[in-house]
View 1 (cartoon, rainbow, N blue to C red):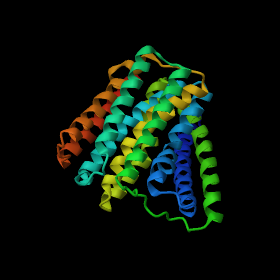
View 2 (view 1 turned 90 degrees about the horizontal axis):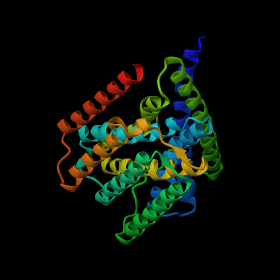
View 3 (view 1 turned 180 degrees about the vertical axis):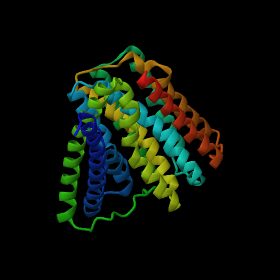
View 4 (view 1 turned 90 degrees about the vertical axis):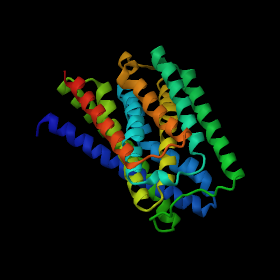
Length: 319
């Protein structure tokens, strides 16, 4: 079997392990939280938000460990673009924006602010250690503030019941197994993605923006489709903004701390990099602030734009 096929299999197996591990960890954590009588709102801000971002975090930390920081940064940028244009575009087609959850404007504004902070570091060409610390502090403060507001307004949270049987003897092993699968998946995925980049002459930045980013956004896409079909799209939309916020402040912040500071390649300051994140996030935030309806036609336009963006990245990645 050729090395190229082995690398492709590594990427596919890595994705499967990441998604399965993330699901197992989140479901186990939800069951443990139920047993400990933790408020559902707090579970949403911690267990679900952090748990669903663990695959991206694992990929980023593994990429940093293998001295492939461009994959880590590219995956966050690409994942945020995919979440906004592909996933939210799908939500619009399914009519999920008809009943957005409370606090959606606050979350949209937070994502824009986080993106602007990220933009500053990208233009600087470096995310220093202290910058990573600042990112994590801002994230913790925002989660605490959102939790306080949610409890004050009497929001009990919207966490679906877990499919996992209500047993601590199953919940704890599920969390452990999920964590192991996530880290193994991240190792295999980054190794395969790096190998493909080297063999086909594609930059690690492009690999991160495309293959890795799209793969780590598949869970959000699946959740949005299922929630939209069940008429619970408002919850999924809120989770997308939470995921983007976690990607920037949590994942990039943690990665820069672990690595003692990360150098940001100049390619990320190009139009297809951080500026595309700002444009797409700003576009969606503008629509939300102006209370403009996310029609099905707009959803198709968003998805078409994302497909065109991916095609452009594939083109410049080959030449």
